[in-house]
Image (cartoon, rainbow, N blue to C red):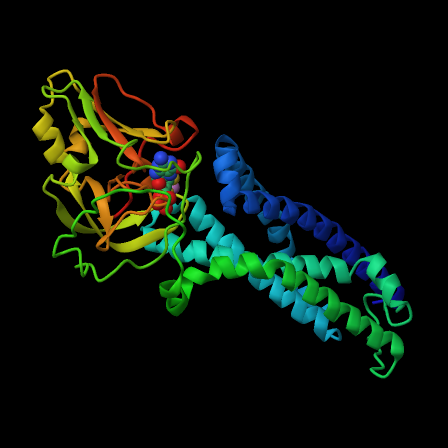
Length: 411
Ligand SMILES: Nc1nc2c(c(=O)[nH]1)N[C@H]1C(S)=C(S)[C@@H](COP(=O)(O)O)O[C@H]1N2
Ligand SMILES: [Mo]
């Protein structure tokens, strides 16, 4: 082939790659921003309805993001040939492709996570997070060090080459030294900016540090504290594995003997209000179960101690017309419902202790609902009222787009 034509084709190929690359950059930015909003707990509480919408945006941009990637893959071989003399560019390409592959694969699993057992989703979420923690700072570093502005700063015009020419690098050249220094500097600045939130993410996965974790200040104040059952302390489940991500759509309520009680009313034969002193007298059971959030994280082997809901409902006497059970939170906002049949499942529990300790304030204490077979958006925290009703009530998250079907596959 004529050398000139060959070179022109190569240029055209390069231009197309650059166009693809720009699309990728825009989509990657959109994905990072929406992903950050989904990850951040402050957005979760301040803009709850936005979250469901942002999740859709994230998933759709993820799908669109795959398109340039699919166009590119068949051309990968050709691209690698143009890079054969640029080792650093090749390494960069492999790193980026590996990150994208992991992000896309885990992202697909998370999109269709209901088809998989929760442990698979836990792994996917971990991979998705880890690839993001590595990929986003890397992408920022990449776009900074390849920007025109940065290159000017390094005054390295003579070192920069066209796509095809072999790179000549003189490591003693002051321009090269300056550029390397600037790269190191920007790399460190970017890494330092991400470090604090990265450490926060990584903590639950480091066994030694999670046990040393100082508990959050607890604004709840109840006395006397319940004596744990022998099966709870030490916990028969051997202690939970994993960390809760504390979620709330409101301020965290501060509860105590005065402002908390548990009401059972609506379509029941015997309405009942328990104050704290009475409530801790009710006979409690202990059960070990896993806790699954629909966003992909789980806490395994929780030893819960509390009152089976069935026992409370049977005591209150369910009237004929009652078809649903509505659960209220002391936060005044959150609620959810089960059918009476679901509410009578043996493992639905009004829980008061976890692993032998009273459920803390952030975790929904003193009393929260536990429904092991369903996603945790059903398990109302700061539970203070159980009402038997005739017509279905739509729960907080279901109203905002979560599925009414909350069954966890394979549990
Ligand atoms: N009152 C109240 N209960 C709630 C929520 C909430 O925001 N408010 N979030 C639900 C969701 S989506 C999950 S995953 C679990 C989280 O429990 P945790 O905050 O103890 O980890 O609580 C559920 N119960
Ligand atoms: Mo959740």
